[in-house]
Amino acid sequence: MTVPACPGSVQNDARSVQVDSPTVFEKFDCLQVPVPDLEAGLAFYRDGLGHELLWRRERSAGLRLPGTDAEIVLQTERPELEVNLTVASADAAVEQIVAVGGRVLVPPFDIPIGRCAVVADPWGNRLVLLDGSKGRLATGDDGRVLLDEHGRPRVAPR
Image 1 (cartoon, rainbow, N blue to C red):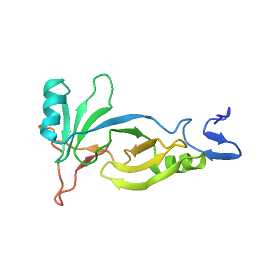
Image 2 (cartoon, one colour):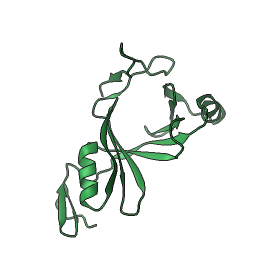
Image 3 (cartoon, rainbow, N blue to C red):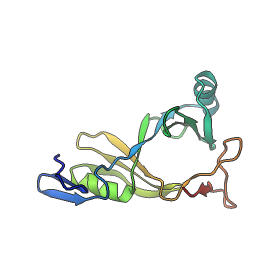
C-alpha cells in the first residue's frame, strides 16, 4: 500500500478511498483478556498486579494501564485474547479496510458507547474496531457501570 502526498486518500493498486485522517487506527482502546471467573481475574490483575479498577459490569471489568488511556479489559464472554482499536467511525473504517483488501467478519453494530465491527486484514489477522461516537460508560464511585431504567449501560457524553 502506498500513501500519496495528498492527506486523506489511501491507494492500493487502482483503488482509492477518501478518509478524514491520514490513518484509520487512532490508538489502542484496550487489550481484552479472557478469564474464566471475573473475581479471580480481578484478584490477579487488580489486587496482585496493582491495576486500578476503572469500571465494572456483570461479565467484564476495565483496569487502568498507567501512562495511557488504553485499558486492560477482563471478560468472561469470549475465549480469545483480543486487541481493540479506536477509529473515528467504525462504518467508514470497515469501508476503507475492505477497499484495500481486508474483509468483514462482523459488520458494524451498535454498542453502548458507539459502534463496533470486526474485520480481518489480507493475512487473516482479526481486528476489532471501536468508535466512541456516543460517549463513555458512566460509572458510580465503586466503578460499577450505571444502568438506565431499562437496565442498559448509561453513557456520559465525551
